[in-house]
Image 1 (tube, rainbow, N blue to C red):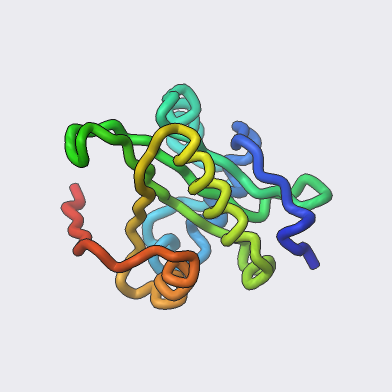
Image 2: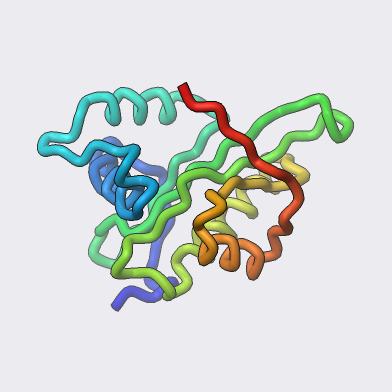
Length: 156
């Protein structure tokens, strides 16, 4: 049993990609979007390289004491003109491995991202979560996030 106190958060590496994609695919929404194949399609590694090169993006993983990836998230720092030219942080792809949920690991990841966003000059952190992810919504509200916008998507 992994507790949040024994988890380390570090920058994701190329060899973490399969574990990250596995977590992204491990729910009804993600299973329809992701391709879990052996070997993993190269599109994921190409995407990882683009993310890894972008100084405004941080893809991080939570690893247990044995070095196993058990969580992930991506933080995007976006400059803008609104709010007097301040930057904002956007959290995406927050996931914890199914067998490690409800142990404080997601909270540790999100709090890490909030601290990192503040350190990078962001005045707020925002995120989107699918309207069907009711448990995730309660989780974010417990951490202080407020329902403030209506999210909309246009898929191609």
